[in-house]
Length: 287
Image 1: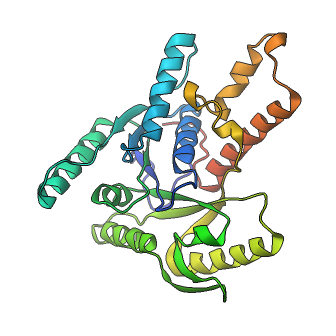
Image 2: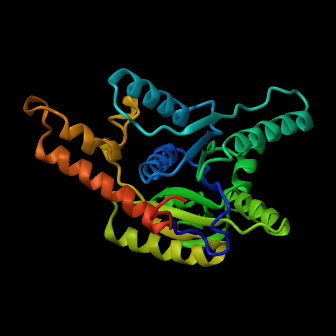
Image 3: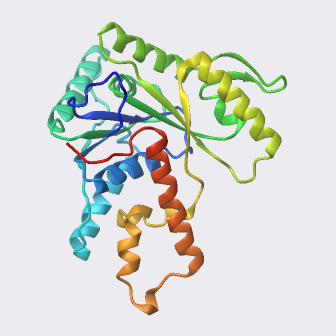
């Protein structure tokens, strides 16, 4: 497994956190596909849903387990834990409760090679705890000036960076805590989900801004996923584009998919494989 050079290979599990303070960028979709892709490479994967109120990752895991049981298909299943916000009335008690339950989840998943964590799209103590545990932090971002606001305050008229965003400061704080504690810094990866309708000039300006921010804030960029129906259409069965080759091969002529849809599935699989390669998680063999 290609991992950060400052992390011992024998240290497991490796924690991948998917985080952002903006909705609609594909956080849960990214977490789901990374987890499934790693499982298909033979790794033991744990998943933690810190966005239990919305519960997209948890729903996917339930759907996948249910479909596997009903259909008889052998599907890779993660060890999953969902962490609810504490109901304690006092802040100190609530934070202690959340920290304890999150630590219990990590302890329970200690035999996994990887743990993939989906975080809520808002600043909270539980969200910060999740970011603090990130060996790799993945932030999906649509290629638009509006979405770059999750990283920095942008003067849209002058196309200039005015200040870091609240979210960037959150990541800095958690990264500094890791470094002070003698832990490796967070490897922060911005996934650029390209939008088909964006103008070429805007795309160039966005690329220039991201290059500038990468140096100032301390992240690297990687290609994300396109807005494809294929990433959502099989959610209720707990399937992903990575599960489809086996499904298509087993169908009879009357169930065969058309060339266009098959092509879309193949392109979706390539995007996920390229994503893992770009963020340094494309593996050889599990330990």
